[in-house]
Image (cartoon, rainbow, N blue to C red; front, side, top):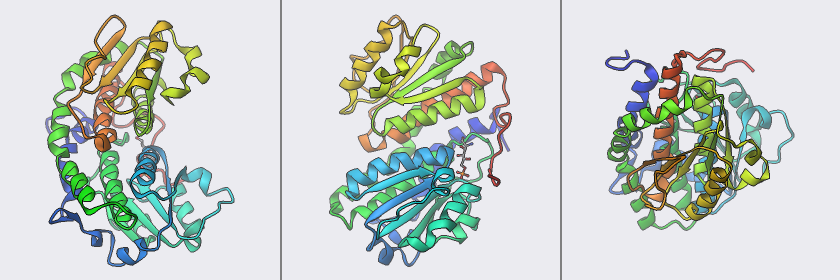
Length: 364
Ligand code: M6R
């Protein structure tokens, strides 16, 4: 039941601190990852993995994109990610030692299941990260890791996405410890993950500020979302949320692509949402923001602690608390979920049941 919340989506957004706890529960012992959480055969299989192929659809695909950055950075093995509906219909090369990692909230998405069935005999093993125990995807995979997010009713995926990201970070650690990631680094990352509930509570406290910002979108027909690095898939997820529930056309771009086309769209009617944490890419991102302002584009910036990004004419800034770099994609997702939620409420759309969409896409 929705309880005090007006919509399931809002309830599920607010459940995220608790969900962060649930996905870590029983998976850490004395500061280290318990890899039996993936299944009793996990260790032997992980030992043989030389690369990872991630397959998913929609929001789950965005989680996979973030994981591909993490795996190449922290494990140092190749990681590819593709939407299931493309992957399953093309001749794919599966190099020796490939782990097939499928991501799905429901575990019943037709294309993801079909992709798994298509290549399972050509990979070293299969791992499903899923929110529904006993689902087809879990039953048909060698290993699985449950996201423990609890039932997600809103068609727009929220807590399932952030819990997938935590599960993907645990997977990254399991592979990393076999590829030179030190025990100290693993421990440090696990400590950071355990701070997520507290951190996400602080982000939820920005809700009224985000609600105030949402008014600027209610009359708009388009929006651009920009990010760099792991925040690019976060921008994609923010754009998907906005189009899905508010029916505003939204596109995400890696900020560096702006000049290669989308800048032509920017004018006063094109709000540009930017996720701009205080990381190594910030200076580059700021240059992109200048380009938007110079064309009269109105900026909505979710910023970190860097004080040079200031509220001014044409730039609305919401400042987030300090966030460990690896956790930025998890943290910056929350304000974007809230933004699309409030825009949809203002527009009066059916937040939990957007038109034309189904919660579980079990047909092609
Ligand atoms: O159950 P799955 O994670 O496999 O579902 C995949 C997509 O259909 C799903 O994430 C969809 O994109 C969401 N409605 C987005 O909010």
